[in-house]
Structures are given as C-alpha cells and as structure tokens.
Image 1: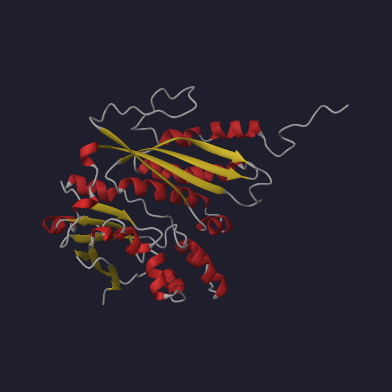
Image 2: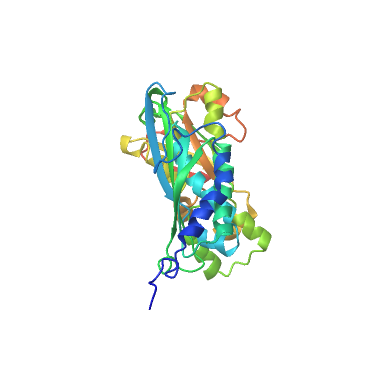
Length: 331
C-alpha cells in the first residue's frame, strides 16, 4: 500500500530550505551592526522603527539583474550577481536623497543548492553592509519544472527613508545648472541583451580575465550622496544611469518642462568595453549603455566647484532650454 506522495519527491525539500536560512544567518547579521529591525523574532514580515525621523517619507525600489545574470552564472560569478542586485535597487533609492534602510530579495531556483545561494547572498551582504542597509528578509522559491536547470531568478526590493524636507526636488532644475558625473565600472547590469548579441554574432573572443572585467559588478554610489551632504551641498537631482543611458535617465527629470542638457563625456577608457562598443550602433549605444558615467548630480553653478572636489567627480555638461539631451564624446 502506498504511503503517499511527498513534497520532496516532487522536487521541493522544505527541510533543506529551512536549513539554508540558518546557514545564512551570519551573513544577515553583518547588515545589522548599525541599524536594527524592530521586534525581529517571530514576525512574518520585517519591521523598522522610524521614530528617529521627525517627518519620515518612505521610498521604495524594485529591480533585477537582467540578462547579465546568464553570463554571471556561466562564468561562476555568483557574488557579482548579489552585488548587482543590491546596487540596481539601492542606487535608485539613493537618487531621492533617502537613506537605504532595508532590502529584500527573491531567489527562484529549480533546486536548492546551498553553496550557490550562499554565495549570491554573500555578494548582497558585502554591498548592504557597506551602505548600512539591513537584509531584512526575502524569499527562496524552489520551483522544479518552472525554473530551468542551471538558471536562477533574482529580484530585489529596496526600502529607504528620508526626512520630508530632505527629498530632492528635480522640479527646481533650471537652465545654467551644472551636471557632474562619476565613472561606472563597466556596462553594470544594463544592456546585456545587446552585449550578448554582439559577443555571439561578432564572435568576440575574450580571455577569462577580460570576461571578468566585462562582468564587474554595478558600482554602489552611496559615497557620493554622503559626500555631498557632508559638504553641505544639496543637489537639485541625482540620477543612476541604467537602461536608457544618459539621455533617458536624465531627460525624465526635466524634458517635459522644456529644459535640455548639452553633455560632453570623457572617452570611455575601458579596453574590454570598447571591444563590444565597436560593434554597436553608435547612436543606439548612447541610448542603451551608461557610456562610462554611472552617477550624475545636477547642482547649482554656485555649488559646482565644491562638488568637483569630491573624489572622482567630473563636469559633464550644463542645463539649457533646448528640450533635448545632446550627448557627445569630449574631444
């Protein structure tokens, strides 16, 4: 007589999943050295005490790693995937002037492999610890038959908080304001559908070292807002340059008000990136990639000189009234 089917026979091991939670506990604690959850034990959702803020505003963001994840899995760069996931979400929260306070992740897998998931979460905690953001929880979904073997689904969710008066106001941007940028490490986690097409269609050969450079993690831009605040400078806006490149990510903040910007960006001194870019449509590349600039602050002309004293800062343009974002490589 059959004793009945089990969940484990169907491909899901709930005991292994519970064991994983215990295994990653040490990693999670690294993100709670300064910030703490409220009533952390026994709840089915994470709670954070906002009483330290006088007029708190909650900011949220949700993003993934995109098709870069396929290459990261292929080249066993799991920690990079975790860092990308955090940066793509936390950077968006930082653009508002908010502090990143909590992060949640979703990991979809065909079968639990502790080492694989632990490495991804280790990458997350490296970045979360750096920007003082709690890994507050998440979901590891074991879905045999839904997630293909060898693949992982990743999504991230960032929560930030700010004093109402500290939120940035892009509506104050005006002609004559200065755009100051900070470099990217590479393509970050955007545009990899085009990167992958070029690598395959053009048979671009990269060494293991070059591939690792191509797949460097998205930079976490928490130091730039911190440096601006320390210097007593309130930018009018900040932008994380992701899909859509400089034209779209900057333009969304001012084009509808009839403002524009003339940008001159430095030539991207990255030999591996250039091996890919030489095969991309030049105009489309500007609309797809960050082109070497991963973070931009728009500031008053009166503040520009002090902002340029922040490490890595470079002036990349000026606001005008053309109602377009014109980008060219600096001669």
